[in-house]
Image (tube, rainbow, N blue to C red; front, side, top):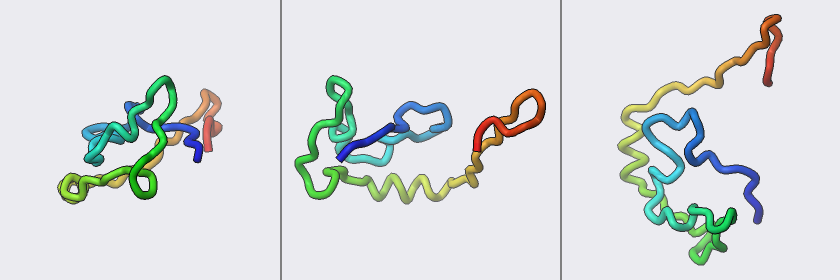
Length: 77
């Protein structure tokens, strides 16, 4: 399995991040630029369901921002 990118610490994670809902963050903590091989079932990640349910109480309607160039054309799709 290969992971191309990870959203840890990315600019749009406000109030929570990738590890906010994980009970065992060590499985998603890079070592020398790589994630350790999972030892648990599946990806080896244990989700903190209580934290997910709590965060869901104050959810927001996230929309991807539209970036435009100076001429008004779309910068990204």
